[in-house]
Length: 178
Image (cartoon, rainbow, N blue to C red; front, side):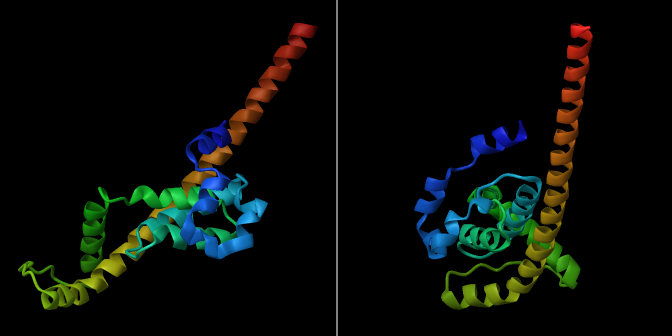
């Protein structure tokens, strides 16, 4: 049931193979283990996808795909989860990460005096990059940890429930046959 639900929303092999930046991985994309859904590959892919979603780097999907291939995790799931941060959610999430970073580092958040110049942009980027990177790393790690544990627990819950259903079905069949 969970496997069918996950597969319904994930892109297929041809879609991922057709994604141009992932072509650098060549033959590695043909490894069946990166397409298989099991408890290990699913929970690991959730962790990689959520961690990379919070990294303020370009081409997050390629980085998540590379990690998933290297660690032999489910590639479509890792790439899809990067879209937790999309053009709509990036500003509030990265602002939250920046606030966490300033709190951890101990910097006082200064007022932003905006000016349309390259020098201003470069100075602000250098000044505010450390708290942003620290905050993104902390939030990324915590979300990956929570996602990993949640995926493992949900997978286990689903397996236990499926076993109980089978046991009930067998008991019902035995009673009906006797």
